[in-house]
Picture 1 (cartoon, rainbow, N blue to C red):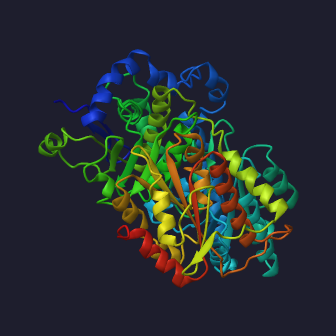
Picture 2: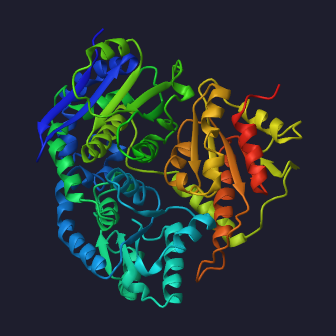
Picture 3: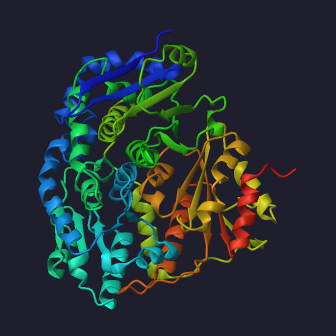
Length: 561
């Protein structure tokens, strides 16, 4: 059996650079089946030329205003000089701590870029009071805040902006001189920034959607201010862009797109594992790109960001597609390729800029094969609307069905029949997972605090326990990522929500609710929408740190006898 693969090499600005994609097993068969048609239909060249007809008549109107990302490696170069100048000014004033307030596409790419380059960036992409307090407690005298929101109305980001403005003012610092905005032209945030006299406003390309914005102002502004050479990032993308535009069976973007979207039957649980790629948390960024782009109209690819040795990769189920993020190979490893040929697996490696552009092209190609519009997100708004309703109503949580060992238990209708303990409630939920189903763990907790350590092994433990793919998301961060697929994708998920009563307290200036109320409303709103869609939802609210440790042990351990 042959192994369809794409290995494209070129001479970079200083050293050789490579993008490598390979597919084996069912993924290879998908590539072999779809690649000739993708080439004959000139999908690659039409995509690079921003042909909005690629995804059908229903998607054309949206695609016409969402394809600017294909040229960002060139159009974003106008940002380089003003960014270099602003960073130099800030450093001259002793300002070298950069805080990013943003959600989803506004935060995930900068986190990958700065982490890969070893630059320090404080990413505030949550509403847990502990995470907010930690960002506020840094040295404000040396801090600049980047406020990123495409719409300019993102509730989380606006709340964070208000809080930092007040903190700067209370510390005797001119808040306006410490605020940098990234937003679309004409947005409410741009107007607020102009009225307040913020230090800088960077207008993003309005023809680029959030999850495709890694190489736009949303990715580059915070990264550059944190010290990353973003010109190098654009050069890496520019070096591969011509290859992605070629209507050739050697085009790695077509290979990856066909492997993701073309298996038959569809392997729609995409388990992404970093196998030494050197690209910091790339899977978290790819998770949003894949989930929001493909999870709609009852179809979609579920990205599962997993650890090395993930249970899902031990004899993968028929609907699991393993994707390994690997380092660039120094030499051909034909023996390893031969050994892998009988399995189903995709491997991806490359420079950071090249890899970001690769995945964007590939997901757009996969959308064509899946028959969906990869540029809309019709179900994301539902949880936001439910949150706003709950904030207006402020009714407080409904009483728990019961409390066990410091954990309050609530659930969607009928799920808890006969259950009187947390263990029994969990068993009821897990029993709802079908043979093609998955479990989503949604933790509305401080992702940088103690909860991260306590729940570290929970995802893998539940995957081993259930024998099915398990996703783990920190709320509300995941609402801007896998949240779309959970609601708009295949109705095969079951949902475990974990919440707690935050110990920190942070007010939101100008609002009649604080961050504790906000994150509580977001969790309740998310659960409400899922339940209304008929999805099984179990809500576990822990009332003490000891209760969280106990719960983590119960979830990650073997099923009770």
